[in-house]
Image 1 (cartoon, rainbow, N blue to C red):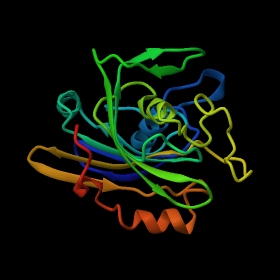
Image 2: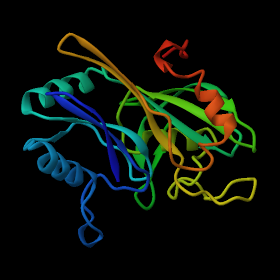
Image 3: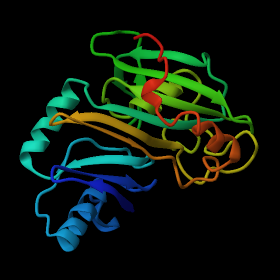
Length: 236
């Protein structure tokens, strides 16, 4: 369900597995937050844990928790001020209407718990992105959200004609053009970068699950994206 990447006196970073819900699912069992909290109590006698952001069930990768109320407050302020940089990876097997740039617009509720991107800009979801051909009719996306809307990245890629492989909500075909069925939803929280109490922190975690992520074309490309914050990102 998860693996601890690092922890300090103020926070813990974990790697979340795909297909794991953040919250408890009733008869389906404890969610990620409950499991991390239980583990920290049993292994390290840590009694406090605060969620400061979340990942969708299909999303794997880096997730940050505060270990005390003071750091939780600071992280909340950093997120509101957009001072925590988050970077994601996604794969799609559909050709996009543009290969890099900015996806921006208000989000509105649609059918069956999904959302859609609007042309209005009252309180827009904002996402910068690059994409790269990785063979097998697939493109690898590197995404940098500047807002934290529900399903933002999934909706963003769907809006440019490239829904994420294996996304049960936004892809009409959970397989791929090659005819091979997806073994997961291909969205991964790849990197985190922030400053806390005058110290800079950087975390980068390539995906470790999902056959399409583990192809040589994708892994080779990721060797050039080890510090995504250094790229010349499209203008906001």
